Length: 458
Ligand code: UDX
Ligand code: UDX
Image (cartoon, rainbow, N blue to C red):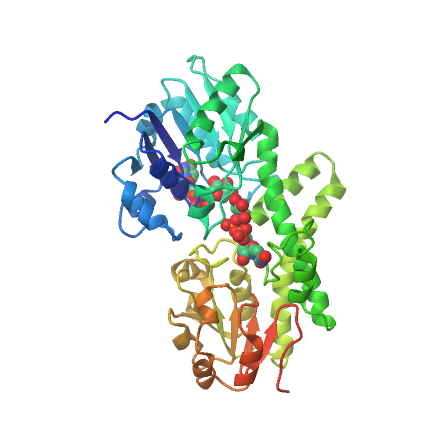
């Protein structure tokens, strides 16, 4: 059967893979190819063991792989064939030179743009899926049009709003799909082609359009606002711990004001993930570039509170356990940056692990999905840590448990049994407030939630 359109996505990561799987599933009339420079990633996408865990993803990939969804390392051939190219390569924070630690590293994006220019023999629509600083599309346009081969490219910005762990649901029923384009006849035509793809399953009123710079900026601002809510509630959690207020009660009262809303007000050990910190730093860097120092300081505060929240957690542990952790055995429940993913990028558990090892604690880490990534993240101190999948086995013989990830399974564990096998006094530090604290206290634990009075037997 001849396909109506050839869609290529460069970058088979957490965004590219699931996004293309859903497009292929919803649109059997298109051929969708996902290409990546990493042959191991592609081999994994073509196997029964997908490289990422995302609820619902396995089923979709099984249904459409080989039908109209293909994974390949052949990027150039893919480019030649494609009508539309999504670019979803990673754009980490720069680690070198000007803007190190703040600005986005655009080398992969630029390399990909050059690759597209070299391999193309006909008109293409290029869609920015990666999160990029405002005006990157302009730079890409310049690179793509800098040879005299006469091929025309249209660049669109179409930021991804999926959250990991709910990625498939978010893709199938998005709050909105945002498409930014040039407001020229060519730009508008390209925009309509992309609208047509999403209109296969997304209601028209949820597909919104804007100019290209608004679209690029909206993604950074969305993430900055979400992260800001978490830092806001976390900043108040520290105040609750000093007073007799309870952060869950405060968040409930504040969130019921419909002008505020109740989502994303869970106090925690701090936010992680590949996006929030990177995107805020990106925003901060841009503001400094335009000499908007007050604005930059304001947003930088969101990241600072997050760093403080992680360190505060360690200081609370130290304080509670008689000011020394040396030689004590501590079990981390969860290592992923959030539940329902194996992703550990920027996970607060990385910081906590390193600090605990620094304090000379003995560390045991358990997680249903993230142990392989955990071992990679902590490769340099791996010999000081045990990685154990079963939480009962992991907690046995420990002095304390620290909950890092809000995995539902943890709330359902038999804590009588766990308590029986631990050192005494036994401590629980619930960095996610997901456990039944009064029940744990009754069993015998000393319980330290985030933003609530501790329950101790001393
Ligand atoms: C995406 C976006 O691209 C990023 O900007 C956003 O902020 C988060 O989501 P993600 O899918 O999570 O990134 O990244 P990752 O899982 O690292 O996937 C990127 C893929 O691109 C990798 O598989 C990598 O091998 C591939 N890649 C990278 C290329 O194919 N070519 C390159 O030149 C660079
Ligand atoms: C985020 C955005 O939500 C998504 O729209 C964007 O496209 C990519 O970045 P993601 O990083 O996958 O998605 O996860 P998210 O659900 O936003 O969680 C980020 C972090 O905040 C996690 O560590 C999570 O545990 C933490 N969090 C979230 C809290 O600590 N408290 C909350 O109330 C909510």
